[in-house]
Image (cartoon, rainbow, N blue to C red; front, side):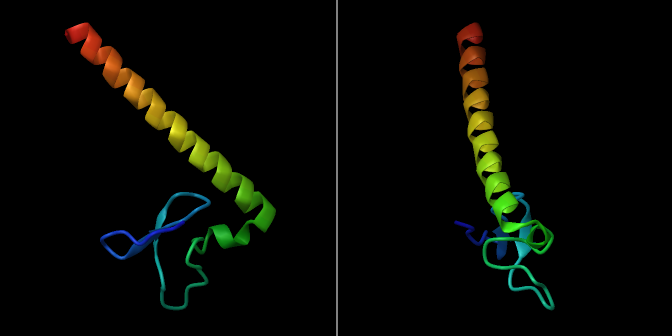
Length: 74
């Protein structure tokens, strides 16, 4: 779920960018930025799933990289 950040901005479920909500004259919703609203709903859903998966894999790689660095130095 898109949560407001400490600075009052939200995270788009589709692209992962931060955006202001509610913005003056903005079409953005609570979960999707104005730019991603132009993408068809089914495509937005798939892009959101893929974005989350990429984030998961990135965290896994970073964790493995940190562990490998600790093993080499320790």
